[in-house]
Image 1: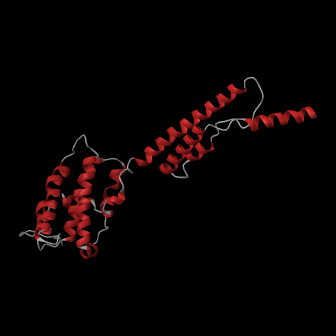
Image 2 (image 1 turned 135 degrees about the vertical axis):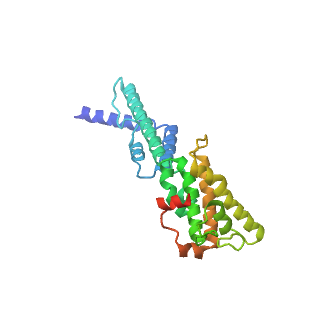
Length: 250
C-alpha cells in the first residue's frame, strides 16, 4: 500500500507542477467566445459547444509517449474548434442575409409590404413594390383625386396634385420646400416607378439599387406621416396592399 500511496502522490505532484495553459490560447478562446456571443447570442449551440471544449488532458500519466498523446488530444480539440467556428460562420450567414437590412430603418407599413421580398432576396421586386405602395398610400391619403372626366389620377398627375402648394399632402413650411418635396415625389414615381413597374432590371448593383429606392419611398412616407398624421391615421395606414390595389396603382 505504501507504494500505491507514493504513486498517487507522485502523479498528484506531477499534475500540480504542469505548466499552465499558454496565455495566447486563453486570449484566443476569450476572443472567439466574445465574437460568437455577440454575433449569435448566448443560446447558440456552436457557442455552447465551443465553450465546453477542453484542449488539454485533465490528468497526467508518467509514460514515455505522454507528450505525443497530449499533443494528439490537443490537435483533435483544435480541429473540433475549427469545425465549430465554421458552423458558426454558416449559422451567421443564415440569419444575416436579410438581416443586414434592418426593418426598423424604414417606414413600418412599407417594410411590412416588402419584407418578404427582401428576406428572400428577390431584389428585382423590391423597387417596384415600394413605388406601387407609396402611390397607393398617396392616393388614399389625398382622398383619391380625379381628373375632369372623373377618372382616378395615377402616377405623375396624382403626385403633382397631392403635393402641390395647397394640395392635400403638401409638404414643407414655405414655397421652395413644397416645390422640392413635390419634385422629389414626382421623380420617384416617374424616373423610378415607370422603369421598375414595367421592366425587370438586370444590374450589377442588384441589391444596392432597390434598397436606395426603398429608402426614398420610406422618406416620402415618413414626411407625410410627420406633417399629415391626422390624415394618415384617419384614412388608415395598415391595410395590406392587395393585388387589385397594385393593378390600379399600375
